[in-house]
Length: 226
Image (cartoon, rainbow, N blue to C red; front, side, top):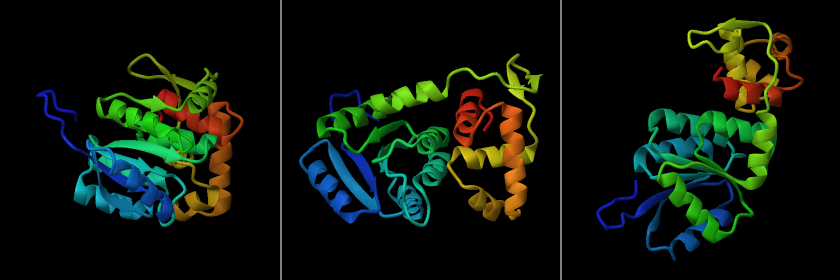
């Protein structure tokens, strides 16, 4: 993204946040940075996908709790359509499901909104160069979530790794869990009853030998199950 010929290309930024005041403040700050240009603003996840395709920004600063479509789903869609776009989660929260959901969706970094401006600029430059960043508080959380877990039953894969034997439907539901969706949301998406989804979730937790949905999402990311 950053040219090597001595000329500095203007970095194109797309701001995604449902609070107009936050977008205005960040846009004002970026206006003071000659190397950066805010090319668009989105107030929800669906609009973020549309503007990312239309404007092709270098970096998307993505909030997570968004109307219409959440930031996790929007991140996954943008990354699927244009993998080279760098996406940096910028959230006020460090909830386990949000953290693991954004990482599973392909985000290049996760920052809390308490981050200092100078550090945010440095993080953007880092992800532009192909690096990844986790807020120290988030990194500790991820390290805890990704501690080795005993998994049964197991089947050997072609690469010699051990992975739980899951059906296609179970993997599908696990993807929704990793993105932070509730049982009702999963039921609506897959046209299943709420009771059926709850049964699948119970079976998944049992197969993965984990205690809750957050641990299931962490295991899914760690072992590449989704």
